[in-house]
Structures are given as C-alpha cells and as structure tokens.
Image 1: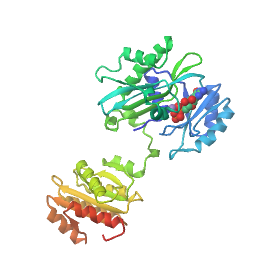
Image 2 (image 1 turned 30 degrees about the horizontal axis):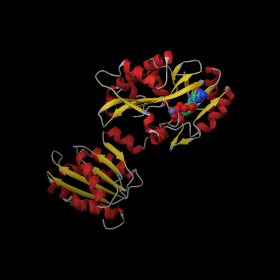
Image 3 (image 1 turned 135 degrees about the vertical axis):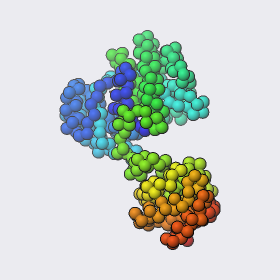
Image 4 (image 1 turned 90 degrees about the vertical axis):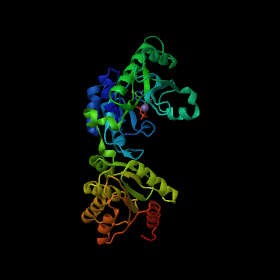
Length: 380
Ligand code: GDP
Ligand code: MN
C-alpha cells in the first residue's frame, strides 16, 4: 500500500525527521487559506500515488495566498499517470542549496534492506539510474542491527555533505531506517533530501510504501488507505479476502490455490491466450467467494471469457459447483464460461452442473484451449 506524501511526512515527523510543515487541501479556496496561515512563499503539491509530479506540472511555487489559489486550480484538475489529483499539500517553500536522493528499500537479490543514495537527487533520478547507474550507491543493511551510525555518516559524506550537514543527514538516515522498520515498509524514500540556503537538512519529498502483508499489525496505517485510486474489483477482492491481480489480457481466471492460479496463467499463455487476471479464491468453496469472484471478473470490461479451474483436494468439487450455480442465480453472465474441475466429488459436481445445462471438463489443457477459443469468439 502506498502512502501519500503528506501521510509519509506525518510518519517522518513522528520519527523526528525534519520536514517543511504543510496543510492538506481539497479546494483552491482552502489552498489560499492554508498559504495565508503558513505565510511567505509556499509550494502547492499534488497528492497522488505517482512519482514525477513536478515534471507533470503538479508542483508549483507561489509567492502569495492569491497566487497559491490560482496555481492550485490547474493542479487540482490534473491527472498524473492516470490518477486524478483530488488533494494538494501546501508547504512552506524552502530555498534549495543542494538536492540528494536517499531511500531504504528491500533488495530482493540479496534478501536484505538496502540504503540507496545519490548526490544526483531531484526530479531526474530515474534518468540517472539509466544513464549513470554508478552515481547511485547501495549499502546493505543488516536487519538485526539496523542502519548503523557509522554507515549513515559515511553515506552522508559520500553525498558530498560535510560538518553539521553531514551530522544532520546521518541522523536523518538513521531515523529513516526507524520509519522503514517500525512500519514494515517496503520503501521509504526521500527525493530530494535538501540542504536549504539556511543550512537546514530537510526531507522535501516523502514516499513510503507499506507491505500489505503486515498491515494487520498497523491499524493506524490501514486507516491512511486511500481507495480512490483502486478499482471496484480490487476493493471487493480485499474485502472478501481473495488474492486478485489484474493483468492486461482478456481471459478471466478463477482458480483455487495460488500455485494452480500461476499454472493456469502459464497454460493460458502457452496456448496463445492472455490472462486478464490472477484470482485465487483459496481453498474455500464458499458460494459468497465464488459470487465475489464472478463480480470482480465481470466488472473488468476487457474480459471476453471466464475459465473456472478447480482442483478438488480438501475443496469439494460439488461445493464449488453449488457455488457456481448460486452465483449464476444471483447474476447474469454475459461472457462464456468454461469450467474445469477434477478431484474430490467431481462426478457429483458434474451432475449438479448438468442439471443446469453446464458442462465441465477434467482436463486443464482442454479447458484452457476452450476458453481461449471462446474469447476469440469461437465455440463455447
Ligand atoms: P516529485 O516530482 O513528484 O518527485 O515531487 P517533489 O516533491 O520531489 O518536487 C519536485 C521538485 O520541485 C523538487 O525536486 C524541487 O526541485 C522542487 N521543489 C519542491 N518543493 C520546493 C521548495 O520548497 N522550494 C523549491 N525551490 N523547490 C521545490
Ligand atoms: Mn520527489
């Protein structure tokens, strides 16, 4: 789950990381009032779950409350990388002497958190990563020990900071590690980390992503969730406890078990189709979950056919068949449905389905080929 800048800055502030104070606003009038309250020059910043806001015109400096209100209007009308801007953060503008990049994230290759840092901070860090990767340094962090003060000091030095700036930056880095660790984050990024004209070291931007699997122990973070960018399907999947990942293809897949779901997607690809999603309804044959699965998949207008792929182990195929029939009672499907089921009680399942005019194959290859043909407008 991604946090907005203003939310990440709340975590920063609690951890003692210096930030420029700000106020979140939803309308230009609120922006004007906020700018008046903050006083002096301000920055109006789009709050969307996307980087590159500055380049997209989502970050603007203003010298008066009136100017802030005027600049907020186009920002609040922007869509950045497909995400409509609904709120802006108004902060005190700072005078930037230097910009650096620092982030703590999980390096999957070495299976550890790392500190990434670069003196080439600011809006072009992605480009630096491409054109001059050596300008970005990586330091592994021992998860037991955390980011040690000497490591933080060395990183600050390598960022070209000296004296009290280096000390302030190294303290900031250690606190950034605390934020990362205490919130089970997968990313805690500051870009830019700035030294101001007055010699202050500040986190001018903040990005924190929290590991979804750890959210159960962070109710305060769960409360920060902004679902406005999520599709109805993703929200329903989360509410019903289904693992759902939308993809680009047109074949909806409903499968019990993550391994079988992966295999199903592989096989769809192997036979020349494109899966529209990964959807694991779990070991359960609970009709409510089956109904939710159908709702999620049919809510995706790119889906042209649905494959139901069930391996009955503990899950009983007859229960799943009942789930499918209940779901079909509750909703009308307007795309072809192909059912493959095998395992416990498959005969009974097939009988139940046949009573309603539905057939099911036991072969996964057959099912996958049939659903691809159906999606292409061929035989059901
Ligand atoms: P991003 O583009 O989404 O990463 O948004 P940032 O918050 O990083 O802002 C983009 C850029 O706007 C920064 O790299 C700065 O150059 C500039 N910027 C943001 N806040 C201020 C500020 O208070 N003063 C000045 N002078 N520039 C700022
Ligand atoms: Mn930034």
